Image 1: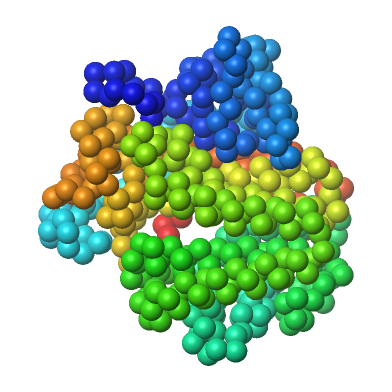
Image 2: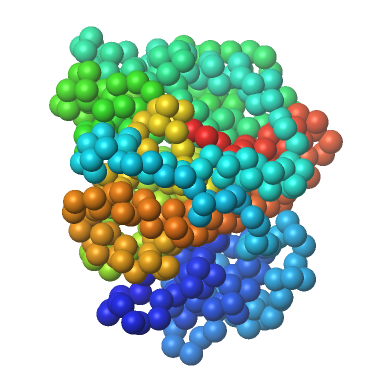
Amino acid sequence: GAGGARGTQARPTHAGRMHACAGMLSPALRSARGLTGLMAAATRGCVPDPAVLAPAQGQQGLLLRDLSGNVARDCGDAAMAVPAEKMPPSQRLLSRTRVLGSFAGASTSANQGDGGGRGGGWSFSRTFHSALEDSVGQNHIPHVDLNTLIGAELNGISERIRHIVEAEVPKLARAAEYFFRSGSEGKRIRSSALLLLASSLAPSVPSPDLVTPDFSPYNSYPSEPRRQQQRIAEITEMIHVATLLHDDVLDGSEKRRGMQAVNVIFGNKTAILAGDFLLARASVALAALRNTEVVELLATVIEHLVTGELMQSTCSTDERTSLDHYYRKTYMKTASLISNGAQAVALLGGHGREVAKLAHAYGYHLGMAFQLVDDVLDFVGSSSILGKPTLSDLHSGIATAPVLFASEEHLELIPLINRKFNGKNDVTLAARLVNDSEGVKKTMEVAENHTRLAIKAVDDFPDSQGNKNAMMCRDALRYLAQSVLTRQK
């Protein structure tokens, strides 16, 4: 979304705007040559930074930052000289064009009044999912039963969370543990990814006594590295649920995970306080790990969550229609938690900086892909499967990637975006224009790029030294990343 006058002005193309490494491109790099250099940089292990780093005048490269904020590499002419078609398929950032489904031919249904039910309005073809699954299946990522590998440990973490969110005030305790009740935990993709990362880098299988529930006090120090890594999984889930409680109050949501939202049952004040309580308990548990670097990583996540929410609610007109701004916000609100949590797990496992960077990269790309698909499901998903109304972002005045890509084809979307879809029939019109564009297809292409890079990070993990459990967990990480593309909720 370049600033300045719009209308007859040429707009950047999808290929020029896609920054599948960090999700952002500076204006100087919106070209095929710049993307080729970015691809070469990513395959050499550059870790993306959410900030847009524009090259100096006359410079033909992009500076990427490492995890400490220092400039890591200069992707200049040497890197850009590598043609994308000569790279191994697993290392390419940009996917080959695939037919993801007949989205443009989706069926429609009349809206029962644009201002009515939040789930009402446009109906999209479900053939999109089956076609996408056929495309993904060609990559031959083996199916992995995650429950066999980490099911018991994951359930133990859920039990521990229910134990540590107990509060002296019964109403606060009920609100805080609402989404941690058995059967209400959600997908638990964050904690699953972190446990799999821990096992994929471990020299041996965790002893049975370390995968059973741990009911020690939340502020106690766990001496075993595996217990410390489990703490990170617990902390990320508590931070995530805290943000859900706060978001539902801000958005006025009525449903979450197919249930009534906490703010509907207990009221806005209790929902906000329950979120604050979870953040407080997570902070104490984090401090108990006695690792300043890990504390800094997870504290930064909370800062990013606040920043991302403000980026979404207080953006300028130009930012509202900018994919760069959308990608940065997505990193702050979603990918930062998984990527920093993954890095923390690697560090607590005693691994070096390079391995920690790879863990961070996996979490980053998994988180970005997850949110991109989430934004697609808001258009093509089923509200009964999602557990929340579809088109909720449009009703909340938020333009996500499918809308922003569609606006490159349909300029009439721009005034709708700028007035946050508040006009009469704006939501219906916006949904129709997205349907009549390649917005969903392009969003899925970006998600697929991030998935490929997540898998590439796992491929670059150090030799497992014949550890079969580590190898299975690496396959599970690949499968988890790939399954993000075909999920329906």
